[in-house]
Image (tube, rainbow, N blue to C red; front, side, top):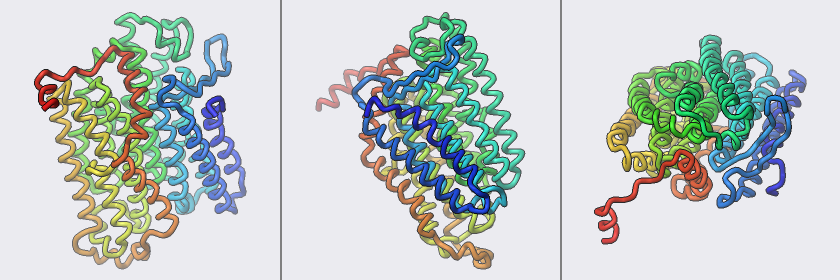
Length: 510
């Protein structure tokens, strides 16, 4: 099946499904939900087939397709995937059906069109797949910008308190970042021989000064999207206002476009500029880890708290990328996947808790585990995964990032380790104040708080829990796919792992 056009079909399929769902009668909301869910399962099945067909030991980029689009500009519909993009495509395929199930009643509670809501989720899936599958810089930019539209409407039309403010802020931040990228894309086209093909551009020798400016244009766009400190302020507002399912995709997948873009475009296309800017990027990463964790400790809004934890986690990913070792790089990519699973689960569970209580304020809970013990247990597990408890998938990625960074930059690794301590503080404090301790008497007066997880909700959380545990004990199937792509990226920038010292070798021999 290696000749099957996986990437183009995967990109188009959700868009076709969105059109079908959007035109279903508004008075038949259950039909729209069922069609959207089945369609997302078809995308998942096709993604699994692509994963099985991918040859981890083969060429760096596989499933390449190219169709002419604007020949005069050198633009084409070119798709290809390496191991880094492949794991992100699988993350999308896994999360979207679960988000659809978790969001079964979200649109109805907002009193807006149910078919449009689920159609927007499928459009979002189309753009997310396209941005990770694109191997043409202009095509990547198009998906990068179009991706904002469905998320803007999901937040602005179906979100909660201050949804309009959050949606506009999200859109403006991303749009400004996109303008920086557009200038860099045009500059790259000029100096690259009037082509947008990634493969050809990676072979172009760009002067030092030009490369640094172009790198900065791409990096600013990706830093805003990620978001890295100090470009992060849009995320707590957007994550806090968005419906829980949309927030899970926003933090679990959309934000990864920023870190993916750095790995795919900044490092290979501008190797000298990447090395020149690395100390500044590492500084931003460690500041983000500590700063966001401290802010998370002081939050009273559940969804804003989870959003701040994600900013801290993105600091770890940034440190892993700019440490320039294969261990740290593999850890960063694995962190992108594991963070999507763990934080996706955390957002979905928090959404279930909020929908029952009718409030996102931590102070409105207290002792909720006595009423909804299963939901409280899943929240506790999601929190432990978020703080990277050994045995969960995020621990593997966080450990790889720290040990890979420690070999080349001990101060950065030591400071980043503070994030682990603070993570334990904000997660355990959140769990203790919401589900543990003395039962808040007002909870007994809320009908929703007497309903524990139903079958649909158990189906949502079970696969994520299973994946987090599986990858926590056996990450090899994923790391085998990631490692060659990370090694190729390190080769692009001319970096090799530091050789062990004589003392280390002698200790190992003993």
